[in-house]
Image (cartoon, rainbow, N blue to C red; front, side, top):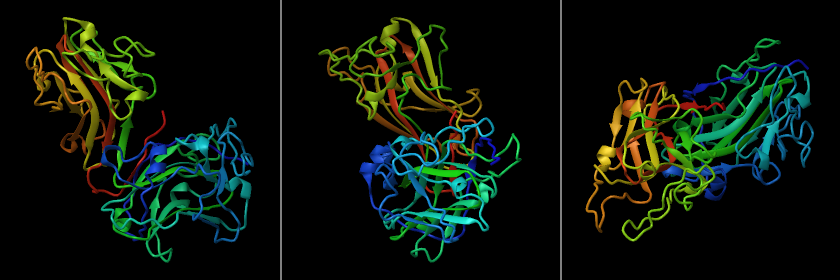
Length: 451
């Protein structure tokens, strides 16, 4: 079969006036496995990572077209067509023309579900494969966002038309439909094509208009197609808000695309630490700060939520009695469809000169810091007395939340910067940076591409 590949980056805008809602019960244990357990106040109503060895009990799996094109369970993304414990895995499509890789959703290696349209073959009428959740109780939810990871390849029917998320609040009597892959079409039979989505595609779809406050919500992934490639799905989460970005610094270094400079010219930089207990110069990269657990300072190792899997720190003490203006800046962030943007992070700071307001700033810019908006995470922190009680240290951790909507919402080139200026201070450590939506404002699906 001749099928092709092009990766797409879609910022999915899904306005859906049609009505359909369902709800979900709180499943925080599964949510924890997905790493989404209420981060920064996020409420998880339902979560499924398909780790139980089969399509979950209570889920619907049917093809009303009569072609028997059903979703199957795959236990091994690399198994290939017909592989895996249940024999339900799809083809890899790693040939030169398609150039795909095994499904790489966050928890794909513990199992996922897939609809292998290629295995069904060319049929006289399109299949209508439907995978449906059990009823979810969202009666207490003021807003509802469905998040999931997927990978799709199409050959006959455009994905923007054939692959839909559907929502019902009346046991499937009526449905509201949401586009998952706008702009993804079958393309040319020869490269370049637009037949493949990102692997994975991260989708977040706001279904509040139909589902918020509803006690009986069913979600359904429906694929109308004929001799397509595959559609794989994993890591389904139903929550109360969008999460635009999460960074827990667990990759062993400062994230790719972030910048780390000292504008004073003294090369006093942020470093990565993978062990809060290591002490100055410890950890696998040698980037950890002192513990400052002496009698005078009486501090403990950084205890941010995910500090044990890594965090970033600026160890001012390490660089001694020199001035520094050290800046850690994110890669560009696209909030062009957002009307509300909230920045959350956990930090721990100790200062010796100046004050928290002077030394530690969060800055947001849309023009590479020609201009910027400044936020003060520690406005009341001062150097204090040289003897106890000290006022030189923040709470460990300090949880900070800034509504940066005025500076960032509607902007397509946003950078966020943590600037630590001073001389011979103690340290500033940060972790668990999460950017979320604060309120339900727009109907949208936000996709983050894999580099």
